[in-house]
Length: 551
Image (cartoon, rainbow, N blue to C red; front, side):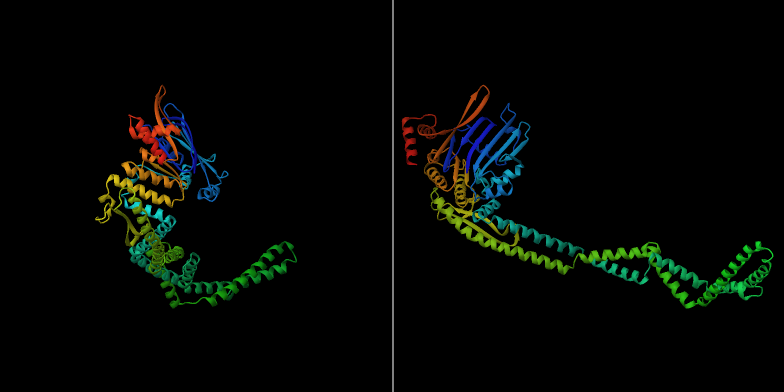
């Protein structure tokens, strides 16, 4: 619950320190006194948007601190512990806004992003603004109210995630369907290309080998003739090189005995004889391996022609066809990784089934809660001068589904027994909308997990006996929660267990607003003011005292 609120230099409040108790607290004051300043300051501490306008004129900064008691078994306690912001069951939210509009946020003394204030505040306080009934006519808000009452907010989030997954699967399937023909054509083209290039089997080294093979076959006769000529010159012919080297070697061997200087020449001739002899043997072996092969030459020329044609078609050099094959295989694998249309269709159906299972479970809980909420609000409206009216939470099935599930939610109401329930916008007047809004908030508050509920003039537009019933309703809520209400109705104010009043005054430094706790005679005087306006008589005071005593 909210334990204390400290305000410094906020709008027209120079300094204010308030302490709060359990139960039902009312906040009153004359019109224009600034009753809603407390709510605005608290909202700022809870993470509301800020600007330089909240800083009191002439001051450097505005500062608001709100202290809460946190139960150890509460979601707020768990959240603080998870974020390492725990402080022995207490929680202090602090917000500082400077004159330039820059703000800083703190939780238990630790600097935090403003978003963390907003997250934590959802476990601490519900604030119902005085214009809440205006948003009540939007069907999206009506669905959110039903879901809050049913306690299915986590289920709604799961359904939303399921919907997104389903839609993403459908999008992939639609993309596939749109591109299927072109992708299939590309796949078929690549498959043909890969088959052709694999058959050609061309690598950079392989292309060089083929060229050598072609040159040898194309010039086989010349190679044979040249080899025969070389053999004849070196060994087989008359006056061959080997015979001459042999003769020269023998002559020098005879002479080297007379002059050793011939030994070097003899050695060189002997080495030359050996090398020429080896060359002769190599040429004989070569001649055995070379033959004219017109059929082989034609086959090789056909393969070379096919390689050249493929190189021209793919606009690459013949030796680059191997890289072209690699690239085509890689692209074909990538297309295969996209999956087939059947696989994508199966994925979409699986995602749809998962979504519908969750959405059906959500619908079942909504149907049950709709009956309970309609009954609870109808009973509450009976005490708010709408005794013959009926409140209905209507669910309309939407087979196509949406991110919010399979239901459209609409609040219907009838203001008398003979009237068929119809939409709020067509049936309820402004005053009736205000009462319906309060009844809904009362029903939601009965199941609310947050310990503190604040109502900012939600009782506007009503009076008399209905105002007394509203006061009793808020008092009953105060038995389950800490309830605070900014009100202009004496019937509501008299029901408060704790009473604060707002006053505004003008000083030399400007307009200031102050809030004070009232007790005893002070409460009688304030309720009398609310009853009698400017003219407060003894009768008015007596009436005020009776209202407080009765409450």
